[in-house]
Length: 149
Image (cartoon, rainbow, N blue to C red; front, side, top):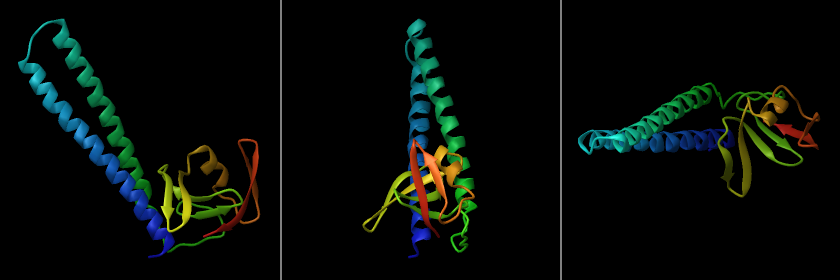
């Protein structure tokens, strides 16, 4: 399988794992809320319900983030190559190799390490629109772009 497709699939897997985790959290919180409703009354009961409500709100926010990541991934066309860094580019530098997509962290394919980064991340913003041979400065380090696929 082509490298870009493998990186994209790894990002999709990352998002799906996050989605499953959030769905499990929501499900267990819903069960806890219904059991809280049946249990003891009083201040302790109200505090427990409030904490569960906060957890549910947090999980809902995470669902929004997951939806946004899926939208970004759906915009990546793995067959497009350009000499200018864009969403879906693999950017080889003198220090690391980046996949401009979503913030999914490290991805290992074969013996190679890639960093899936968002175009809105600090380093993603610096790399976006750059081309081979250009240099960026990140964390007081000069990073040279060696190749863009």
